[in-house]
Image (tube, rainbow, N blue to C red; front, top):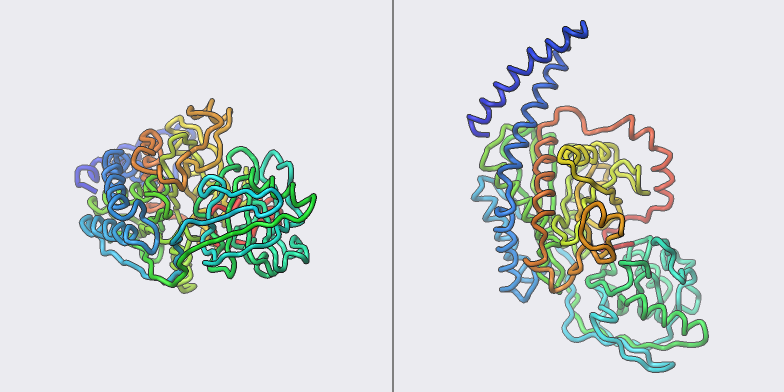
Length: 532
């Protein structure tokens, strides 16, 4: 913090104390020393936050986004884990953090790499032969075996058709969902409820020689989704199809045998990936605030919104904090995770590498994944589970409230989003570490109500380029980036300066029954991609 800013903070607090005393006099109640210290702390935190919000600019974030786009363009159009574009992204982030004064750790970890080497083929052999078009009718699922199979389509027993108004299908989540005839056949599974990895495991256990995962059918859940993963290498090939293709196969299978052919050509091998981690110089090393964003893209595109926007914002905040050499109460750990698009691999490795003592040092995790969707909504993770089925660990509600209060001060509306396992907060909440964050929306469709509140276009995805080649520098909303980056900067300072435990005991206890009910219907976390 610059000296003039520190002087301003001290002056403001000196003025504030008599004012608070005068207020106390009117109520015949003197403020306690603890209350005065709290007031001073809040004032200083507010001043530092305001300064950091001014320093973190859209132009500064865009500088990083432009660099990430250039890296993707120079490396086959992507920045995916295991490929040159990702290593170049690691080098860029490391270099920028070092210039800002950080000591940087690049944490390696092994992972299962998957890459297609030829055009995938998927066709209905009988009845009424039909050849499906890659990337339009279907996409290869990550970790498919490099093999060709032909077999009968056997649907799971609980496909929901017509689809319910909201996602509800639990197709393929349990062993009982798979008929005996699945063995030696190709399982037809509907998206929904549990992770794709869990569905893939169940299908493998049932003896399937291939899987077809169809989109569920609600608005925003009808088209092909690129980059859906099976949780790890499988002995069979798999495809993710549009709802239309899956619905047609299911309907035909009700009348008699349907046979399809799947051919995948791919590399499945072990490679090394990296997380980039940097701690602030100041702050209690036994009280750490982790601030994370995933650095990798999918293989089909540059990933400038997903998640260049989170990466660039995290990096810009880290740079501005580093340049100011702020005397923080708690240490801040800026993290750039690798392999999120393959199943939260980097964050999972990081948390697993911590001892129990080290885990207890982490106060909370802030996660920023997609902050600039063109048709955005200001989503805040529902930490206390008040609006969605899945609450985070104790303290997550407090994190949520910090974001809600920030946006309320700016007169900006927000909407809740669930802890559904889609991003790198997953390994933290699974280990009892409170978490929270922001999200501007992915492939789901903006409702009429949301369009009235946030503007944009109803009936269109929040990000029509999600997991697509068009997720480039032109796929960024500066308005969203400006609003979200202020909230990111504020949250980092609020928790870096917080002296109290990160808990919300009363609220947490009050919602215990709801969380218990949510736990019964929540899927086992497997660190997969899009899961619902």
